Image (cartoon, rainbow, N blue to C red):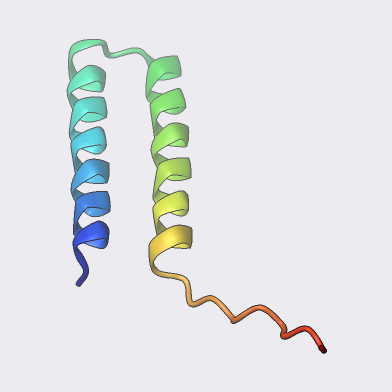
Length: 62
């Protein structure tokens, strides 16, 4: 696993822990929903940028 993937996963885990602490000490349903949506978007972005296989761009004729 490359260093950039490891740092991205560590950053996501840190974000999730922070959001979990926030939900634990401020137990409001609307805050929980917004944080879950935000974590879902962050997880999708990490998956899209780091783990999806990309096709090479089509070559241009010269």
